[in-house]
Amino acid sequence: MNLKQQTDMKKFSLLMMLLVASFGSFAQEAAAAAEEETKVVIPEPSLGMSTTELLIITLLVFSIILLFVAITLYKSFKVIYQESKNPTPYKTKEERALEYEEWVKQHGEKPSIWNKLLSLKPLSAEKDLEIPHAYDGIKELNNPIPAWFNVLFYGTLIFAAGYMYYYHIGEHGERQDDEYKTEMAKADLAKQKFLAKSASSVDENSVKVDPSQIAVGKGVFDANCIACHGQNGEGLVGPNLTDEFWLHGGSVKDIFKVVKYGVPEKGMVAWEKNMSSANISAVTNYIISLQGSKPANAKAPQGEKYDAAAAEAVAN
Image (cartoon, rainbow, N blue to C red; front, side, top):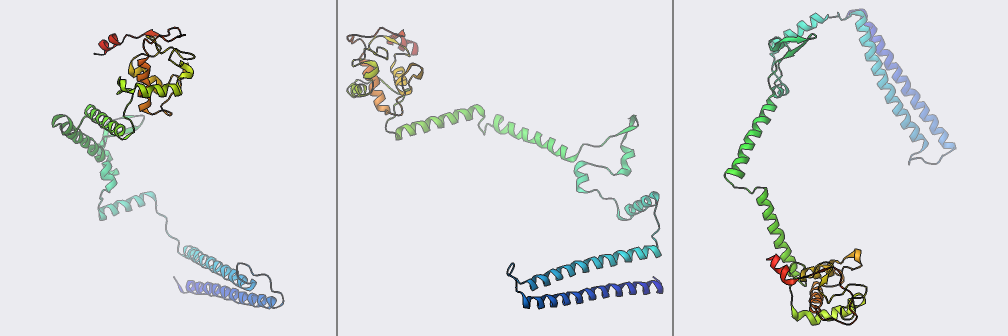
């Protein structure tokens, strides 16, 4: 930069300094005037500050913004001035390419981690990768398989070999069918523990004919069942319970299941929420004891005939 340029830059810097100083003086005068006004009229405080304080803060913020703009303009004008005096020569595309090649030669071309993972080759090596055919001027490169794909592929092979040995050859782990059996055994054990803790462990699978429950069952029957089935089981709204014909099976398990879960479509309510398992078992045994009693005014048979001996033979 010559002497004239230095002189012009000094003049420009002095002008910016005078501009900032004059604005600071104006801010002080405005603050003083505002303070004089507040002596006469004192407005209500805003945000916990007086009008004078708000005005001073506003002027300070504005001063900072103005200073930032002045500095930015100063630097911009400085660059423009330097370029007008000593313009930077324009470089062609060929010159920039040569500079890049020189930089590669000086610093060496080291592939990045990304290029290593994807097995990417530099642009300078593309000619060696070209496959000798082209379609509509489009050439194909014989790039190698990416490293991440090889790692994934061989990793799956190793995992498959380990899985085969662990589960099928060495039999160290349970296969799906074995896991199913184990889980079912655990479920049965949990069910047995639950039934053991409950007040009664009787259900439709474990109920048995027990004549000792008939007396208790008669009391349950009289309290809950005579409205539909009659005083002696002869049948009213519900079917006759004293003959050999049954709508839903005549075994002890079938009767227990009907009493417990009901038959909603036939009007038979489910008693599992209002009657304990012990009482359901007792009333089931009482109903079985009514077989062949032939009460008066018995309702006509309904359903299919149940043969206990034949059913037991089929079950065995």
